[in-house]
Length: 169
Image 1 (spheres, rainbow, N blue to C red):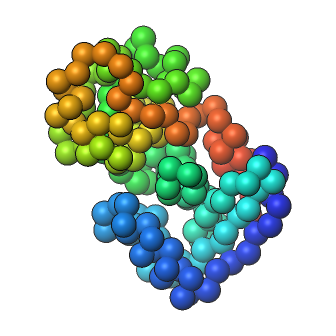
Image 2 (spheres, rainbow, N blue to C red; image 1 turned 45 degrees about the vertical axis):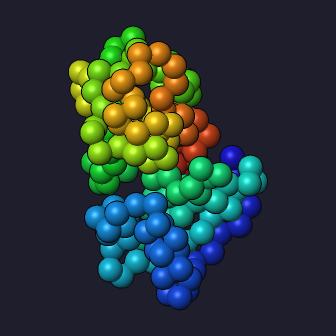
C-alpha cells in the first residue's frame, strides 16, 4: 500500500468530517481523535483506501464499513471502544482476519448494539487484537451459542496496520 495523494484539509472540511464521524461515535471518541486545534491530512492510497492523519499521527481509516480507528491507537490506549473479549483459542484466528464466532467469546460489553464498531481483545492481557463490527446487539450475542457475531475489519497483520507502522510524516 503506497501513498497516491495526500493533502491537508480546511477547517470547514474538518467540521464536515467531524459531523460525519459523530453520526457513528460518541463525543468522547471524537474528542480523543480530534483535539481542539487539529491539522487534518487526508491520505489516499494506491489501493483505494482513505486514511486520516491528525497532527501528524495516523488515526482513522475510512472503509466501506465506515470510519475505523487505526489499531495502534487502541494498543496505546489513546481511544476507547466497546469491547468483546475472546479466549486464547480464538486469538490466532482473529489476528488472521477471521470473523469472531460466538463460542470464542468470554465477555460481551452489554451496551453493544448491532452495527457498532468494537475492539476485540484477548482475555489474558486485555490487548487489542482487531477491530470489528457487531453483527448482533449484546443481548442477542449472549443468547446465541453458535455462529459469527462480529465481522473482523482491521487486524494487527493487515495492510492498514502495516501502512500505519511505516507511516512517516
